Image (cartoon, rainbow, N blue to C red; front, side, top):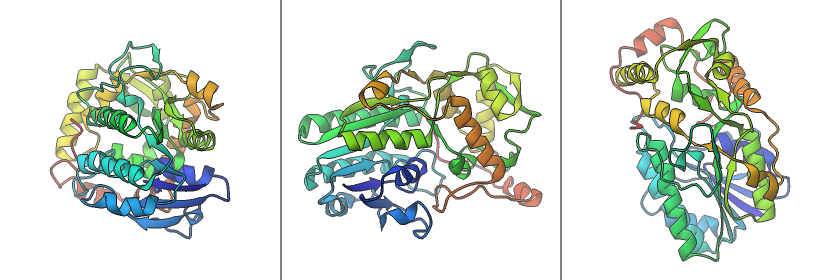
Length: 357
């Protein structure tokens, strides 16, 4: 097949390039190009495209012409202040991809949505793909994915000739994404190498729960979707649900029980000062995100995750401790700044990343 992938340098895009069988004609699109001599990026042809800019739909239509499938993975998750605004990449970019897909007559479109699109659900109950995608008000990421689902609903109504699949994964982790997660979650106060230390205190509230899926398992699901021409939404998650103690056991080993409001206040203070990039909106999403039932993926696609939740989280932690990454700008390894460099960075007052409220 001829497959065009937007956001092909990111966490899932990189894994998808590695997962696709030889013989496909793959075109990778990204705002910032990778080292095209390195694996797995050498397996694709490349074009530098910013999907969110005005007129991108015309350029995308030319690039999509003759494609058997488009996989839309481009999404600004937690951009720094100097990057294009989230709404430009996520809303405008998706509209351009959808318009170009229809104009080029692409028969199959796969779009990365998220379990974050679902509205608040019973705390320990797993939900199927029929759950309404109303989002969580306090999370910009959740609201963005809910808005994406609305765009896809409208596109499906207007263009029934395009087979549309939407994946709804939970948190997607991989050791190769360590640098990306370090830049999203950590900062000058907390070096990546301390994560996973046996004596690291991890402040978490008691009723926190989380699902995780390994990036390679998400890439395998997309490979199966492309091969089967699957259409419709599908949840993706490892089967286990991790509680606060299980999360702390992998992240550091010592859970410090704290009320959620206390963690949110602390997160807001460190985000506002620029000490940490983690916005409290992410904590609200972690607390209220729905748990995904993956029966459809298992029965319709034959999908079976190769990593359980603990193994997937441990893989990311190992990558953080080892300073791993990939040869693309989004997945560049975490920086190994010295103490003086970290102290100097603390003098830059103000949030380092765009708001998630």
